[in-house]
Figure: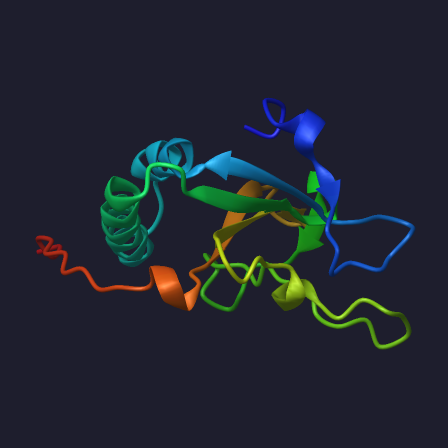
Length: 155
């Protein structure tokens, strides 16, 4: 997706860093929803993503011109992270820089569009090697809504 929209990439206006930066580009919502439909992960996360996709599809049905603001965090360069105590999850976001101008990943979003942050993360602990693309998604208030999704619990 990033390669398709590379010509439209721009520096994230909320990122004042000069040594590296987050990149922002806009993608038709239908393309993003197609990718989210194929996304796999833990069941609880998949339920949330599927609920989000249902609500966004309803908005897209009303307005087929909707765009998603996609942020390639650190230009999609690998970011080193550790697994959490559960040995499955990762804290994706980088926080505020105590000695610099960066206010943290939570500031990289578009207030009027669905925002998807793409985080390219790799193991920093030297143990079992892993890498992953992590998603952080932010829904603006005007696109919020509710969906109910029922699934069969593991037996």
